[in-house]
Image (cartoon, rainbow, N blue to C red):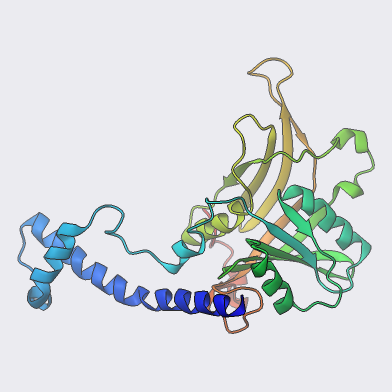
Amino acid sequence: MLKRNTRLRREYLYRKSLEGKERLLYEKKRKIREALEEGKPIPTELRNEEAALRREIDLEDEHTAVPRSNIDDEYANASDRDPKILLTTSRDPSAPLTQFVKELKFVFPNAQRMNRGGQVISEIIETCRAHDFTDVIVVHEHRGVPDGLTISHLPFGPTAHFGLLNVVTRHDIKDKKAIGTMPEAYPHLILNNFSTKLGQRTANILKHLFPVPKPDTKRIITFANQSDYISFRHHIYEKRGGPKSIELKEIGPRFELRPYKITLGTLEQDEAQTEWVIRPYMNTTKKRQFLGA
């Protein structure tokens, strides 16, 4: 299994190294295609390669014309099977953190919760790879308050790091009858205001934590971005007065996520390339939105 993982990782890194060459070739073919369509002369620097490039252009279709990236490869097989998630915490978790992770286990379908104990991250990741887990979620805390959440996609990444704020668990709400029970049906997803390239990347990471729901399910999970803070809300709906009368009921938990780092490897890889990270000077750019408008 270790040799297989090493081979797969090497193949993935090789495909990633080809991206620059493929992008350069794509740009050359794009210039030739535009020149032919507009009736302009072929650019001087491409005349020696024109014949070979035109043969390649003739053989392309809509699926092969645009080069694939390593980001495409990360979730290339995501639709083949439902996600399988491992949930764990930082070491020596407090009671509030343990309770929060117990509730997250019901939020994410097909999730399994594991007590961290003395295990190191590299052991957890290797075990998850061996048992075909698709994602690992680690929840962190500071003085008994959950303050961080890390999502690592397997087997190659990416890994997204979020700050966790304003956590309200179902356990904190005294009126248990008002919130009711939490259904385990696959939920519909609402992803609001992830309009930038980074926003679409973040939405892609979040949506692949959930399997495809049935059309008639009444469970809804919302990730709504506002000023780069992602609000998580969990509802069920009822049609009490007919098809045009819908009653929403929040069943918890609720919290806010603030992304601050995305890397192209898995959680245990300290040498993984950083795709995006928030810098101290970015905190002063109040008018700039990284995830959406």
